[in-house]
Amino acid sequence: MFQIRKAASTDASTLGRLGASLMALHHEFDPSRFIAPTPHTADRYGDFLEAQRSRDDAIVLVAEEEGRVLGYAYGSLEGNDFMALRGPAGVLHDLMVDTDERGRGVGWALVTAIRDVFVCRDAPRLVLSAAARNEAARRLFDRLGFRPTMIEMTMDFGS
Image (tube, one colour):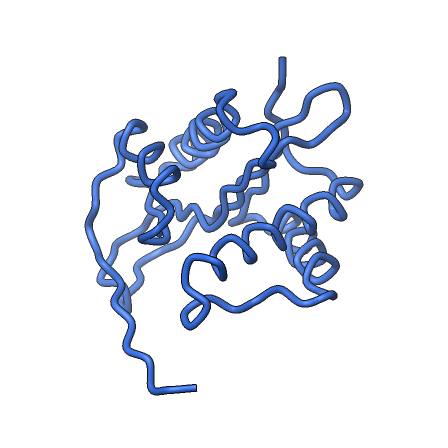
Protein backbone atom coordinates (compact mmCIF):
# COMPACT_ATOMS: atom_id res chain seq x y z
CA MET A 1 0.00 0.00 0.00
CA PHE A 2 1.24 3.48 -0.81
CA GLN A 3 1.79 6.31 1.63
CA ILE A 4 1.61 10.08 1.23
CA ARG A 5 4.57 12.15 2.41
CA LYS A 6 6.24 15.49 1.78
CA ALA A 7 8.54 15.42 -1.21
CA ALA A 8 12.26 15.14 -0.50
CA SER A 9 15.18 16.51 -2.51
CA THR A 10 15.89 12.96 -3.68
CA ASP A 11 12.50 12.99 -5.48
CA ALA A 12 13.42 15.85 -7.83
CA SER A 13 14.23 13.76 -10.91
CA THR A 14 11.08 11.65 -10.58
CA LEU A 15 8.97 14.75 -9.97
CA GLY A 16 10.55 16.32 -13.06
CA ARG A 17 9.66 13.27 -15.16
CA LEU A 18 6.07 13.32 -13.86
CA GLY A 19 5.81 17.09 -14.41
CA ALA A 20 7.02 16.68 -17.99
CA SER A 21 4.37 13.97 -18.46
CA LEU A 22 1.75 16.40 -17.14
CA MET A 23 2.89 18.97 -19.69
CA ALA A 24 2.81 16.39 -22.49
CA LEU A 25 -0.70 15.28 -21.53
CA HIS A 26 -2.01 18.84 -21.64
CA HIS A 27 -0.22 19.54 -24.91
CA GLU A 28 -1.93 16.47 -26.40
CA PHE A 29 -5.31 17.83 -25.24
CA ASP A 30 -4.79 21.18 -26.99
CA PRO A 31 -1.44 21.91 -28.70
CA SER A 32 -2.35 25.52 -29.43
CA ARG A 33 -3.09 26.25 -25.74
CA PHE A 34 -0.54 24.19 -23.79
CA ILE A 35 3.21 24.34 -24.29
CA ALA A 36 5.03 21.22 -25.43
CA PRO A 37 7.70 19.63 -23.29
CA THR A 38 11.27 19.81 -24.57
CA PRO A 39 14.19 17.47 -23.92
CA HIS A 40 15.06 19.71 -20.94
CA THR A 41 11.58 19.91 -19.42
CA ALA A 42 12.00 17.07 -16.93
CA ASP A 43 15.16 18.62 -15.45
CA ARG A 44 13.64 22.10 -15.34
CA TYR A 45 10.36 20.90 -13.85
CA GLY A 46 12.26 18.92 -11.22
CA ASP A 47 14.29 22.03 -10.34
CA PHE A 48 11.10 24.10 -10.17
CA LEU A 49 9.34 21.68 -7.81
CA GLU A 50 12.50 21.38 -5.71
CA ALA A 51 12.50 25.17 -5.27
CA GLN A 52 8.79 25.15 -4.40
CA ARG A 53 9.37 22.43 -1.81
CA SER A 54 11.36 24.81 0.37
CA ARG A 55 8.82 27.67 0.30
CA ASP A 56 6.68 28.25 3.39
CA ASP A 57 3.57 28.94 1.32
CA ALA A 58 3.89 25.86 -0.92
CA ILE A 59 3.60 22.12 -0.47
CA VAL A 60 4.76 19.25 -2.65
CA LEU A 61 3.47 15.82 -1.66
CA VAL A 62 4.26 12.44 -3.16
CA ALA A 63 2.57 9.08 -3.06
CA GLU A 64 5.22 6.43 -2.47
CA GLU A 65 5.17 2.66 -2.42
CA GLU A 66 8.24 0.57 -1.61
CA GLY A 67 10.55 3.50 -2.36
CA ARG A 68 8.90 4.30 -5.70
CA VAL A 69 7.06 7.60 -6.30
CA LEU A 70 3.67 6.92 -7.89
CA GLY A 71 2.49 10.51 -8.23
CA TYR A 72 2.62 13.98 -6.75
CA ALA A 73 0.56 17.02 -5.87
CA TYR A 74 1.85 20.58 -5.73
CA GLY A 75 -0.04 23.53 -4.31
CA SER A 76 0.41 26.87 -2.64
CA LEU A 77 -1.38 29.00 -0.10
CA GLU A 78 -2.35 32.30 -1.70
CA GLY A 79 -3.99 35.50 -0.56
CA ASN A 80 -6.47 37.66 -2.44
CA ASP A 81 -6.08 37.37 -6.20
CA PHE A 82 -7.79 40.31 -7.89
CA MET A 83 -7.05 38.91 -11.37
CA ALA A 84 -8.98 35.75 -10.50
CA LEU A 85 -11.52 37.66 -8.36
CA ARG A 86 -10.77 35.21 -5.56
CA GLY A 87 -10.12 35.51 -1.88
CA PRO A 88 -7.49 33.55 0.04
CA ALA A 89 -7.23 29.90 -0.97
CA GLY A 90 -5.11 26.84 -1.20
CA VAL A 91 -4.41 26.40 -4.91
CA LEU A 92 -3.75 22.95 -6.32
CA HIS A 93 -1.44 23.64 -9.26
CA ASP A 94 -0.39 20.10 -10.20
CA LEU A 95 -1.75 16.62 -9.68
CA MET A 96 -0.06 13.85 -11.61
CA VAL A 97 -0.17 10.10 -11.13
CA ASP A 98 2.04 7.76 -13.13
CA THR A 99 -0.04 6.22 -15.91
CA ASP A 100 0.60 2.67 -14.66
CA GLU A 101 -0.65 3.56 -11.16
CA ARG A 102 -3.99 5.15 -12.03
CA GLY A 103 -7.19 3.65 -10.69
CA ARG A 104 -5.68 2.76 -7.30
CA GLY A 105 -6.83 5.86 -5.41
CA VAL A 106 -3.46 7.64 -5.60
CA GLY A 107 -4.92 10.87 -7.00
CA TRP A 108 -7.74 10.81 -4.43
CA ALA A 109 -5.24 10.34 -1.60
CA LEU A 110 -2.96 13.13 -2.83
CA VAL A 111 -5.81 15.64 -3.19
CA THR A 112 -7.20 14.67 0.22
CA ALA A 113 -3.77 15.07 1.82
CA ILE A 114 -3.09 18.46 0.26
CA ARG A 115 -6.60 19.59 1.25
CA ASP A 116 -5.83 18.59 4.84
CA VAL A 117 -2.60 20.62 4.77
CA PHE A 118 -4.47 23.70 3.61
CA VAL A 119 -7.24 23.19 6.17
CA CYS A 120 -4.56 23.09 8.89
CA ARG A 121 -3.13 26.32 7.44
CA ASP A 122 -6.56 27.96 7.71
CA ALA A 123 -7.23 28.20 3.98
CA PRO A 124 -10.97 28.80 3.51
CA ARG A 125 -11.08 26.84 0.23
CA LEU A 126 -9.12 24.76 -2.25
CA VAL A 127 -9.24 25.74 -5.92
CA LEU A 128 -7.82 24.18 -9.06
CA SER A 129 -7.99 24.31 -12.82
CA ALA A 130 -8.50 21.25 -14.98
CA ALA A 131 -8.09 20.92 -18.72
CA ALA A 132 -11.51 20.83 -20.37
CA ARG A 133 -10.60 17.59 -22.19
CA ASN A 134 -9.19 15.88 -19.09
CA GLU A 135 -12.38 14.00 -18.32
CA ALA A 136 -10.77 11.53 -15.91
CA ALA A 137 -9.40 14.33 -13.73
CA ARG A 138 -12.66 16.24 -13.86
CA ARG A 139 -14.58 13.14 -12.74
CA LEU A 140 -12.14 12.71 -9.83
CA PHE A 141 -12.53 16.34 -8.79
CA ASP A 142 -16.32 16.07 -9.02
CA ARG A 143 -16.29 12.98 -6.76
CA LEU A 144 -14.04 14.81 -4.29
CA GLY A 145 -16.62 17.62 -4.00
CA PHE A 146 -15.16 20.34 -6.23
CA ARG A 147 -17.62 22.44 -8.19
CA PRO A 148 -17.05 24.40 -11.41
CA THR A 149 -16.65 28.13 -10.84
CA MET A 150 -14.75 29.47 -13.87
CA ILE A 151 -14.36 28.45 -17.49
CA GLU A 152 -11.19 29.47 -19.32
CA MET A 153 -11.72 30.28 -22.98
CA THR A 154 -8.99 30.66 -25.58
CA MET A 155 -8.91 32.50 -28.90
CA ASP A 156 -5.97 31.68 -31.13
CA PHE A 157 -4.47 34.34 -33.42
CA GLY A 158 -2.89 31.93 -35.89
CA SER A 159 0.46 30.20 -35.85
